[in-house]
Image (cartoon, rainbow, N blue to C red):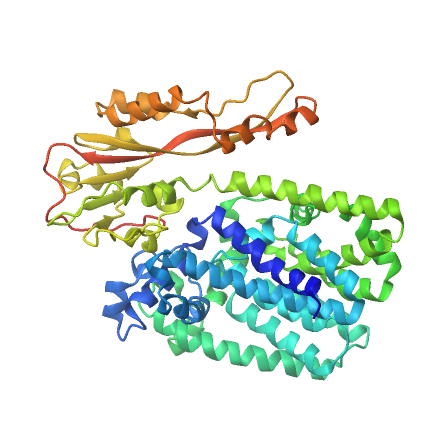
Length: 581
């Protein structure tokens, strides 16, 4: 392997870990797997339903549908060596777990590029790598503990196996794709079906051989998920039962339950619907991001007709068929991005044979990477709950009795996690108070009872006006309000908008600390740091755009409150309710 090949092999983990570093918090969609990994790390595999109910987050907050524990269980064991090396003394285990997942996806991308190199040559593999990593969504979500990410990991490896010829590799690809569909995301069954049809039609494999491979992967994955997940979901709500299977065998197949809820009963439509063409006109262009793909993908199809049949047709059929479902999200079709990016790379290498084409390709990759960096910077501002919980550790004293902390639903949905409840992102040598108890009550009637608030020493809330009692505002944590287009001559506001301050004042909350912070911020507004300067004009980039600019507006979204009447903190107990984390 040459030095340049080594550099390209190191690019995927470098880019993915960079995304993790700048956006370390998580949202509610990722919470099931992340909380499950925390509970497995702390308590191991529970021996009884009582242990599950006592120690595991999903027993209290099961969510809308069950999800498999196989991904969290595997990631728990794979990330354990990093903690054993002592890294958890300096880095929150949430980062170590996510880094492990990111490295796994990186390895899958390196394997995919290796298969591309063997079949299509080094130039195509390198262009593929640059195109793939200059996108935003795949590197950003590669370390996020979504079921889609676990499925994407197996899908990338499977489609790497489909590149080139080789019966064993093709069979392995079918087995992996089937396993991913059975355990993590049922929509992959549709991609599996069209992939099988195309490879059989093009005589890349025989039908019987392909079916045997699918059956092997499917049966093994089904046996694992039934054995493991039936144990972890033994105390599941009645609605989580798998139709017929649970009734006659007592077993639970989480992904089948989720499929029935979302696709058969239409439960997913409660989260919104989109027109049939959404994936083609909005989602895929956003996922591919690189503007030159509009040219290079058609060029790749023309220049490599057989490859186009094997890479493009399954992707198009899958997306077209999945467009029939009314609820649409980009992560449901992200599995086709590597294949489409490969087609773009094939066309890009052909385009680069001409000097003007090479310049256009390089410029497009640079532009795409710049846009992705901007999207990363903006997206990192969208986790005020996680930032607030991380900041809380710097305010907590080390008392002789417990600090009871209430977190409301918006806080839990925007970054709060069990890992962060224990330690900040970057623990200090002095350690973290271990006596803090966290409450996630969301019952509206309970929250209106003044007695509920008496043990609450600390509150993390997006609605301070609803808090009952006398509290001091220790810190106001900003989050992303909106992204807007500024015309030439318009001034970009980099200060934090504080509408909640008026609501807090109306509710009688003290805000001396927050007001002092606001005054200090205003006093230093003339001395902006690099981030503020970038938000103002992109460090001079706005001038090149003739005054046009995309600005980010920040708003105080989460408040850290501390009781000031001396009645909280000791002897409190944690409440129950679905906090979203």
